[in-house]
Image (tube, rainbow, N blue to C red; front, side, top):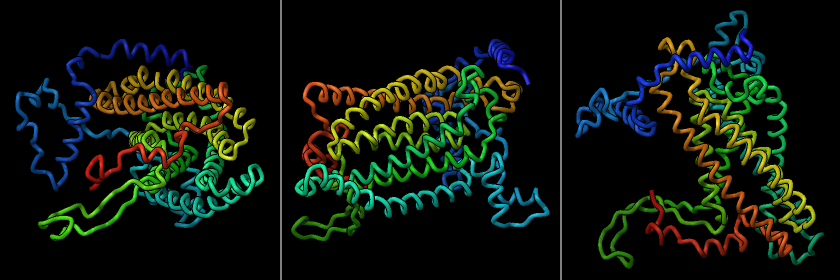
Length: 454
């Protein structure tokens, strides 16, 4: 195979010969993505009546060849086939379905159908893993919280327990998070150690996109890493909704009475803020939404390499976050200060250096390498329309994560100033005065929207 310098020369030659000027008339990525969404909706059997929707768009916006909505972005069909369990058995005529063959398929076979969440097998495993994670939390969170209760009594006396029930519950949550982030970080460092996309001497981040998707086999270690991460983040999204909202079913018909003089219709589902809503709900909810969309998009589009990098830098910096929160909840001042300084250093290195200048830079300036494969140049690989359509998704979502990193960094700086000037160890990330005061300052769903309903 060609060496790294030879690959660079080949890629530079392909880039110089690529007819970029032929595509200068293309609309921005968001417009192409909008066109793709409309086509996807209108191409199914239910909405097939709008399959010719472009002919009804006024002002020439959808008229070929240069109308912004005139371009049809086809599905990417150049992905290597995934090996399903039935395919695996068909290739092994001397073996039948058994635990042994299922194990070999799931843990010793590259590019199986577990490698992308859009496959039914992967979706089923994701569902089971999410259920397992929730069962583990249900079993161990009370145990972890009870341990936090004992530590609180020893450190602050029995009276501390009466006024810090929320802190005790949070202690259990962060012990669980510390276990997960520590284990997944250790696995990530071990598994990705020596991978070429982490090694600048071997080409570094160019391997995230060069040769895509033909040389990007999804190894079992990567497939399961993605499945576990997806299950954990899905559970995190479900959990934040459970503790933030109260969902109630009600009659869709309001009969005349005290509340209404006439018959009225209303949503059968009402949504109110929960008393257990955390002070950092807005930031964390946005973070979880973005993260889950990125997981689904990167898995569907086979960008698992860059997705794994995003996972790892977050997990590594989450470990000192969990430790500092645990120490702060039980008021271990010295441990809090040490863990906080470790957190600040880790945060800067992972989320403010590696994330923007290594990962995000690659998304901005190296994604064009997917167009320089011999297949794409021959018209059988990723097309220019597909490239512009999907690139902006990662640019926007990863950029949004970066904005959150910067916002949280300034919050960390405020905590550092409190530590230095006042000797306080308040957790500002969940609001200094706690969730109850935070809720009092928020407009309730009924005040802001009449009521959050759907």
